[in-house]
Image (cartoon, rainbow, N blue to C red; front, side, top):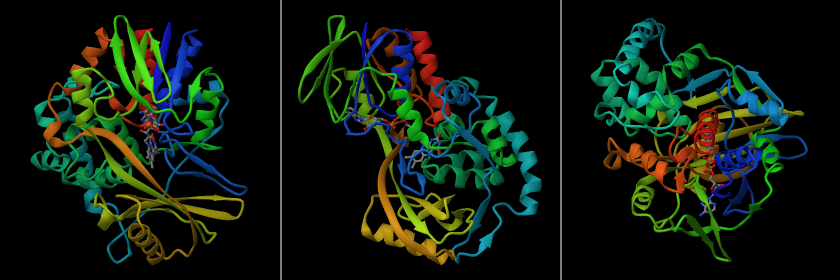
Length: 399
Ligand SMILES: Cc1cc2nc3c(=O)[nH]c(=O)nc-3n(C[C@H](O)[C@H](O)[C@H](O)COP(=O)(O)OP(=O)(O)OC[C@H]3O[C@@H](n4cnc5c(N)ncnc54)[C@H](O)[C@@H]3O)c2cc1C
């Protein structure tokens, strides 16, 4: 059996790795000259900097790290919140913390009404009650403190503002377990040499990776699938797609319609070398969810150097980068220089007008009978811990 995988991000590389372990021949197509997608680590003499994925929540992913002999550390993250005048403020007041326990119980009861909508590793059928923005949903259930608790996490992880993000995605991304772990401030898992090490180790076990080769056409012909690039066309028994492809690349009406609806958030990461001191992860509370404004930053301190990585929604341009630099300096940190400003497109999802109750069910049903499948963050919650669970389940059920 020959399988083609489109996209060499975490999902594509993990799928390829798992299939090769089963003795299945795999070809991975990647449009860039480097693999890893949203996992990208910059390495220099003094520093390892995560530009994309930073940490993982999961217990499960440890088994992959052990298998690949990748070392990791689990540590607590301390957080500061700044107001519009760059003064330190509480995330939640004491009074709000008191109210939170009651709201959490209420939220748990409310969400229990939607088990089919929320319980799977993949997205599934969507209950209409959850197709409204998270803010409206929480307001209608009078869960005001929970909304204050979740807003910074959702916006800083690139999912957008609680006024736009549908409750369905929000509660898939942050289920009750994750919300409790955020409140407890559980330790998070960091890969010591950076997530790119995981990608490199996965790649060492994959025999056929094609670099800088963009897939232009995917078409079922008989019981095979033709994959065309600018340079060649080849036939496979199955094609697994991990990324949003441009209009009409997949010659399949349903998939094509779905691809056209999938949207991503433009999001940027700016990495700086800053004065060498201990700096706590800092959220800019007044900006959360807003476009073209710094959301938060965290730092890496290694070998007498401190690197700061800041995040904002928008497109890389001089004004936005300058405004991020200015806000970091206003928060009391001296910036030595900018290392890089990188554009990302994060979180494949559907805008409110496109989300329909059966959107994901239609995709998942189609893959049961088609030799073209959409996998990874196209159909599942995009944290790497969940992608790991989703890809493993897909491989186990399909091959
Ligand atoms: C700044 C940032 C911070 C993040 N932080 C975290 C975090 O701390 N924890 C966490 O769990 N998650 C985090 N995430 C989310 C997580 O990184 C992603 O959801 C995950 O890496 C997605 O992996 P993927 O393989 O599904 O998709 P992608 O990484 O998007 O990979 C898709 C690949 O397909 C390739 N491709 C696209 N079109 C074509 C084509 N036509 N032909 C061939 N190849 C193509 C792309 O170049 C890419 O390499 C973060 C993301 C970003 C951007």
